[in-house]
Amino acid sequence: METNHITLSEDEKASLYLLDQAMGFTVQAALRVATELNVADALIDTPKTSRELASQLAVDQDLLHRVMRTLVSRNIFTVSNDGHFALNSVAQCLRSDARDSLRAAVIMLTDDTFWLPLGKLTGTVRGDPVFKQLFGMSFYEYWSRENIPASENDFHAGMSSMSSVENKFLVRNYHFPENATVVDIAGGLGGLLLSVLRANPTLKGILFDQPQILPRNRLGELGDDSRWETCAGSFFESCPTADFYLLKYITMDWPDELASRILRSCRNAMHPDSTLLIMEPVIPEGHDWDSAREIDLLLMGSFDGGKARTEEELRALLATADLKLNRIINTGCYVSIVEAVPS
Image (cartoon, rainbow, N blue to C red; front, top):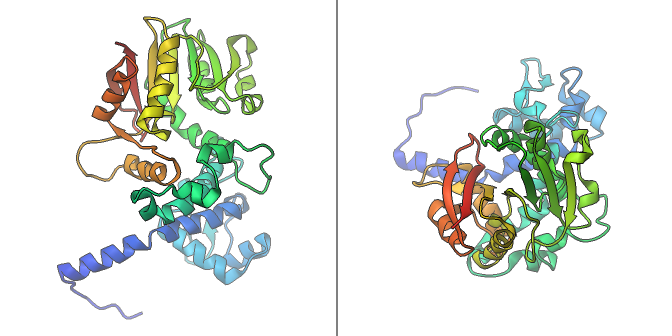
């Protein structure tokens, strides 16, 4: 291709930039294709051409090549001058056998339960219950169904995958006193609590969640069943008594009224010296790009009234449950630790 030196006006640059942003969802679509096809696994042993990959994965060579070249342009996979695609540090995270594989997280984040509501975000902004219109029920009702077909992606597995990376940042940025009891509220498969217990050998933990979730927990990986227990229940009704309360990705999923009820349930169970830790994105001041803003739009689309909150919004929310914000800890990733105590 002939290369010409072209000078663009500011208006032309602005127009092209806007069009590029409008097509950004194509990258996520390509990422989902590579993840569903297990392309990263196919490249573990050796780089491969698109022909070799297509033969191994039983897909169309030209179509796969077009997907892969898009991902390479975004620093997901690499390609050599002779056309061999290979893993880079980013693509390594897509391997299903990676210790902290993000494969399930990518599948979850690009699932129809997030993807489709975002396509109708205008309806949400207008006040329409878009998720319920699309799926006939709320997000959590959808993922709480019994006997979900194996062909469907698993929200809880996706959250566990995503947390495998996030939990490292959280655990190393908070100091727990010795011999304390920690309860993980709606802790899913227990990945966060497992990380906390591993890093703090004198702590004991309680995994609190719905009865259909608890049997799948990972706490047996700790190797010491005397340090943990499970407790079934609803955080809208009551919570176990403990020294520390972990609420990761909980209050942000609910509108203020229901989030306040959850916090009140915790507050009612807390003793005077208990501490509550909200672990979720906090919307920063200013208007610079931040992952918290993207997560906020995911919540807007799929959760009825869910939102990522600012510091002041969190302070006001905590006050409705007789709690006060003590400090916000920057962990180095998009999940902050909001420390609250009884007021």
